[in-house]
Length: 380
DNA sequence: GAGACGTGGGT
DNA sequence: TACCCAAGTCT
Image 1: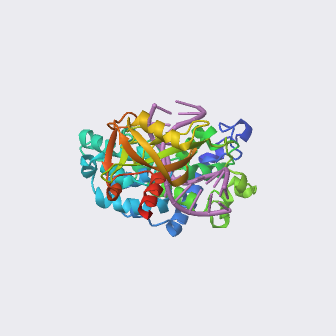
Image 2: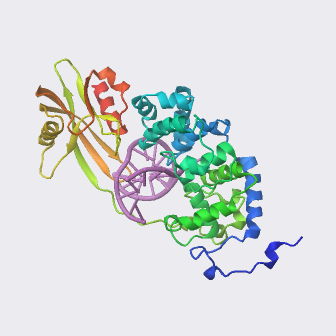
Image 3: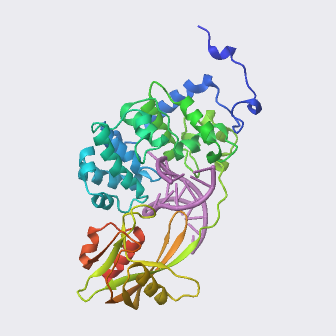
């Protein structure tokens, strides 16, 4: 039998279909990449709870939690979640506030809202079964191409490629990508698809992610433990530290926010539920707003509470100042005790308002920055 | 297609 | 302290 590669024409890198790649992978080498990676995985793969199960629901949950989130962070949430919502049906029937409470602290809360909605779609349109094809999976809220590939391969061993942060970094180094991964998504997807082992798609994808997470790390990759050390452009040319290339980024804007802990005569505190979409959607918070130029914190708080809640308050003592960094901006929350004076609270800029006793705060999902305010209240 | 969207950990 | 980065998706 002829080796088909002996007849294939060698294409110079400069003329190949991958102009952004320093060292294209010859199809002849695919088997060698697959073989060496799977052997490495057999010896070095991580044992993770979502790899101990065959339940597509549990695997779906893990894939969503793992979006932009490290394994160590996900572990406790995953265990609690599976006990709290053991089936698609239990999730679909749950109250969204309960779902958000279970997600509290994990971030990117749209994931929880999408999970909840997708569970209802799965019950309504897919007979309660997590779909098998990437096409059906991608039709569900919160599932994009990578997560669809992750679920299809992990839950059903389907030959579906993935392209998460780990795979982007590994492939960028292996082929010597000349541009940041975000500029070469099409080529990276093709690479991931070409490399995928059609005989062992589940193990291959999991292995690729483990390699990126434990060996081919962002900083100081441990190349002497890598099964691809001799097949990797970055390793061969000592460019591990320079790959993948990164984009420039502008400094984050910084906002100052005046925040009110408003007490009524009954010893209750006023909290509001943020609009369902957007930043921290559906979570509860202490009301407040942006401090305008030349404005005092006290004036800001009184103004914001009047505008957004429709009540008059007396701004009192400073409680705490919280600095918090989001992905795209930084905030400083300057929190003051306030006393309710008059007016009927209205949810003008939020979805709902409630008076609650301090010991009831833990029943509501709050963002991280507000947790520090709650802790300060308890300490006082 | 560029920006919105959280939080924790590492350096 | 400040910045980078992490199993991405949505608009």
